[in-house]
Amino acid sequence: MSSELKATKRDRVGSRAARALRAQGRIPASIQGQEKDNLDVSLEAAAFLAARRHHESLFDIEVAGAGVETAMVREIQYDAFGDNVIHVEFRRVVRGVAIESDVELHFVGMSRGGVLTPLHRTITIRAIPSKIPDEIEVDASLFSEGQTILASDIKLPDGVELAMAADEHMAVVAGAAGAEESDEEVEESGTGEA
Image 1: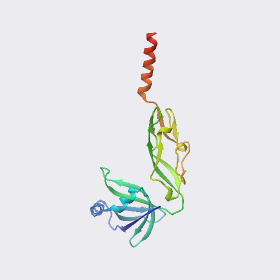
Image 2: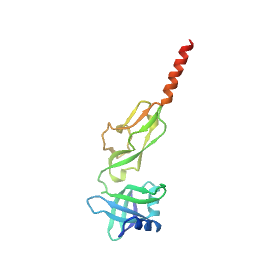
Image 3: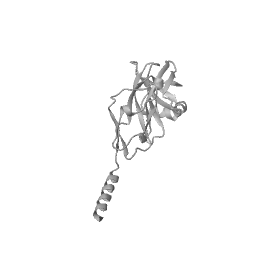
Image 4: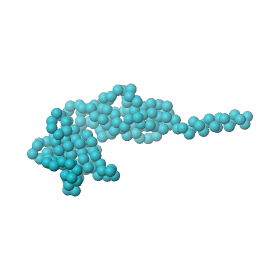
């Protein structure tokens, strides 16, 4: 499923022009890829943000005077406080044609008996554009102390396949440092009294 956005071409680029657009309630953006020239556009901020609240990342962008571009969000840049979108980069795609994409991992829950340390924040997947999720949740409670989470251990949504080495280490569950020391101290103090 995709959302529709209306855009206008940008004749002027640069920080001064971008600030002027943002003051008018628009977001500077670029549409890239598919061996076509990059297209600098501006979007209505409210329409884009409303679509993103519904986790949309695939868009049909109607560019005034240039037709419709089907594109996915590739990167969103925020201001220094992380509150306001200052630029969006789109990647042109073809509907129904699988592509590779890096998707953010979101670790949820508590691992059993240890501390989960992510080694990668993204996973490379392959899917048609409409099936590519914004993020993939990894349930940390399924993993125990001493376990390494491999790329193949991460449950992917239907229609999505792994596009990186299956044995790639994505996270590790290490024991809590203080827990081991306190167990040893208890054993030592218990043997001294007998």
